[in-house]
Amino acid sequence: MNMKLFGIAMIILGLIMVIWTGFTYTKKEKVIDAGPIQISADREKTINWPPYVGGVLLIGGIVIVVTSKKNS
Image (spheres, rainbow, N blue to C red):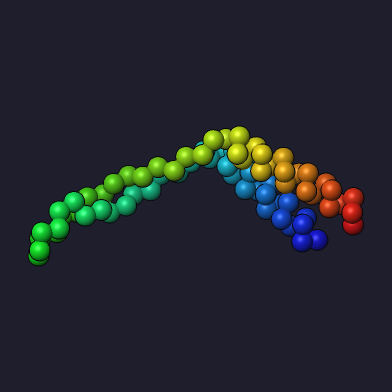
């Protein structure tokens, strides 16, 4: 039963990674730190991954779920 849940989690994660190929977030960074004077700026960071990684997770999850049914 434990492997079946792992396979289902891989399928869900794979679908999410195929649909959304990345995300963007904002991080506050210090630009100037001169004693009592501090100036910060918002920097936008992006994290991307290739869609085939989600496809591999999806297929792997399906394989795990199918093989766990045969063993049960």
